[in-house]
Amino acid sequence: MRAVKVGLMKGLKKNWSVGTERINKEQHARRVRLELSRDDIHRGKLLLVNRNHPVVAQPSDDELEPALKAGCFALLEDRILLESECLKMLASLIKAAGGETDIMAVSGYRTRQEQEEIYETSLAENGPLYTSQYVAYPGCSEHQTGLAVDVGLAGTPLDFIAPAFPDEGACLAFKQKAADYGFIQRYKEGKESITSIACEPWHFRYVGTPHSQLIQEMDLCLEEYLAFIKTFTPQNGCLTWSGNGEICDILYVEAGGQGASIQLPDCDAFAVSGNNMDGYIITMTRRAAT
Image 1: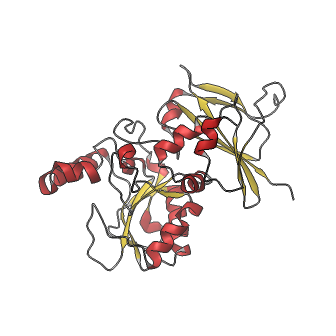
Image 2: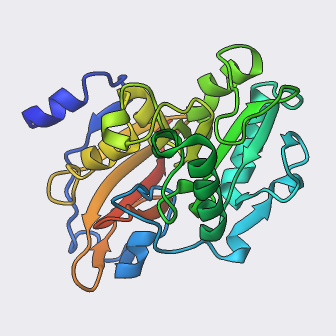
């Protein structure tokens, strides 16, 4: 393990390790080969969206579902939409936190036009400093992916931009369990110089497991995590996570001019996400030996 990895991995629990297996194309010639396009950089659950990396690919209509369909938590508006997997896991998280009546979904998917309206309204009502701290610039909002949700404490007057979500009751349980259901608090205190957004205890982003657990365990923001994952390549070895009866191997693959082609090692299932920058994160799952 290189020194830089040791420094970054100080907070890891024992179920995380650096894999030493390299990708050998000949050895695994009969296994799955991925052919990834340049456009695939801008699709997936691990997209980095910020002022420097705007949204490129909007979610399609069939990727979004009305939050009303979940039927197990309160909504500020019935028209709130979320990416389908994000919605499913949000419903499971709220149930696990016992927040069916206490937690309200305040905002989900937004079009660019909606983000522009929110941004301009905040400029007029709150001024440029507040707006720059709490409202993403149009085209650069995670809400435009359908993978971000703002939540608040139901039964209280809610500020649409900064809803109350206290460290108590069901709200606290939600925060404590979020990573187990694939969510991270996207903007944390102490990360403002990296994210360029103030601490937002109400804004949660779906990245999926095991990435959410690793981000929480290492106390990273998404920018830091995606930089960390870049050190795990087919040449250097994968990051391996084990838990819940399965083992996950995580790799970063850089995109070339036409995309990337990679032969995967043997696995039971895999997921691919672009990082909205320069490559792809491949998460391979296999059953743990019993």
